[in-house]
Length: 408
Image (cartoon, rainbow, N blue to C red; front, side):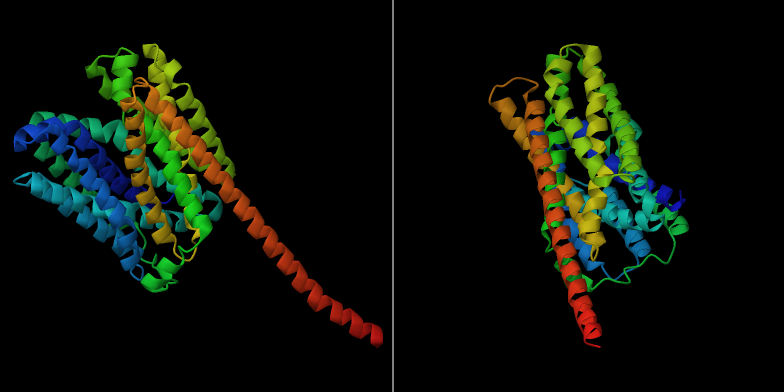
């Protein structure tokens, strides 16, 4: 695989670390800035809003620029946002800095996915995307725990300075390893990029992302109370168990990329079915500690099997604007984060038990299967219509020739 994929993975590692580390640092931030933990929780929302707004916006407005320059610029914005977070004097400035940090997130993954697929042969596209996403999943295994420990011992501001350093390393890697010739040469500018999204298959693919990853976050957002209240783990063990989730996600991401190069839609359906099964079994898996650990690992694997297939499918459905569509998929991922957590919270608030968010997630995964099935049906119908039209044209051009020959 090209070394440029390593540069993309380094950027993904930094982004994944800063996205998730704030959750473990909320008490430290709240104490230092003299705010409540719920108020500090708005920092998570500010970052997610930045991702949702920045993903399609930045991808669209940079449509005519060199993808290499865009990636470097996005990572530069990422460094600035995290550095400002480290030096924020109060919670209002920190909210603004977290929003700024989130702006380049989706566009980086979106443009990066396009660059990754252009670096390899067509039969290895999904694998190249999975290797870029490897940085994101490894962040959950190593980046987030290390950054959390750094914040707890050196202060939360040191964590954001450390993430800024990762961003600088990513900029250097991108400048050295990403080729100069990856540009938006065929882009029609902002209008052309937006026009390419007026497609039902694109929106069905994005809807599959929202439902599928909403299923994940419905359960994962409340994994700590499941592990402590249902499985009986001590709070101090949760960090290690979340690392197991990262291990499962890393394995699922790599397997999904390899399988999707052989069958994109088959891998997507298989991943969603696996997610339904795992989430449906969560009430049983959370009855003992060993099975709970297995369940957390399987949850990461089942969810991230679908990561690269969904990313590649969105790009293929909007071939005239792959960067914008790919970035929009990252916005959909963060909408899934917020929506899934909300739905899982409703199940808990209704008094259905500690593992009820997982069952709500299973229902969302079934919805994802339904949307994916609808997308498949739409594709089949369109392919049949094209075949009928093509066949009709062939007959129309062939019959007159035979008639003229007969008259002769």
